[in-house]
Image 1: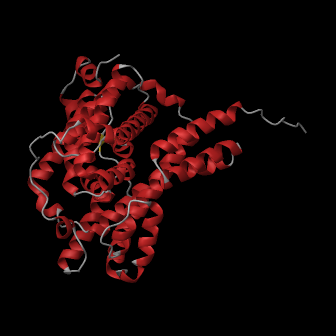
Image 2 (image 1 turned 60 degrees about the vertical axis):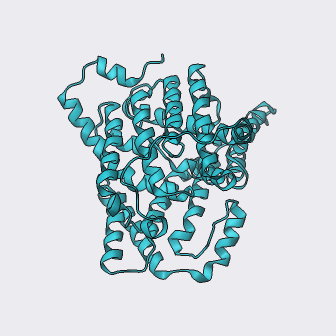
Image 3 (image 1 turned 90 degrees about the vertical axis):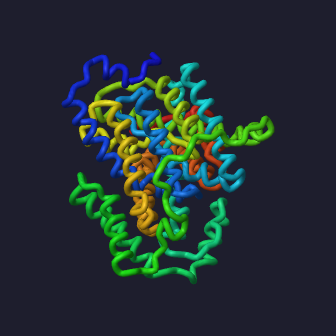
Length: 416
């Protein structure tokens, strides 16, 4: 059924009470997404405004055309490892073209009704590559969390660790203190005031401290310059047959991750609400979003689980909440861009440390470790391949190994 959930919600009747719920939940999610979108863009090796543009353009499209009532789309931490690698190897223009191609692949996947294929990816593989992404995100934040002086952080994980060790003498206690304070605020608020916007409060406190005390801690503006207070004009990236062929593996990886991440988010949203998403129209919306985002210079986008869960807990009625979240982000960008430029990079690093911990699936890892050894082996291999090689390789090898091990004869079960 290729009908967006927005159409269904409007057909069922949409009144002022529903709009009030969607406006409040959309504002709540926008407050969470504002610092997060910028932090993800910085961790991905680009400028913070790219993250905002992605959340605005792709976020609106994913909600307007998607197959879930409550899905919130935008840049996600899961893409950091992929985006950083593509930019490092092919430049930012290469990322734009790869994302555009990925959007086309997702569009075709939805039209050919491939949305149900996600159920064939074994759970240990999903847990393994998610944990691997979390490890990689943590590694990207070491520089800003500890205030290390590194001209360019390598993309390779082992080379990255070597660069951190070499730069250890440049450790900044002041930068670390701001990062640790921000991390502490987020943890305390999550424990004692879970309904408060912990990310934004932590960023605000850190910014006030740095500005009022004139602390020499690097900010968004000092590294990247002022954040633009408007959306860029749409433009096509440079396209050629040779360039597309060169970027095809990257486009496939982006499409695969966007599809898996968005459908997983939909499944979890269904479990929270008792509703049922439409997987194929969801893939189509992801395709449209990843075609539109690079036209405005944005990053790859997908369904964001944490923001989707926040949307549900805030009482969203339907997809208009996600559309309004994008509108609120645009208003923030138009009005508050100069203030956002003052955010300390150490505080944003603390934010992503929390995101990485939430992604680590440590409880799932421990649960898998207590189960069949074959599942735990698949999980560890997928995790290692994600960190050390490539996400697509990790998923393909992990899935093949998981099914291969199931075909082997099982040892007999001895009864007491």
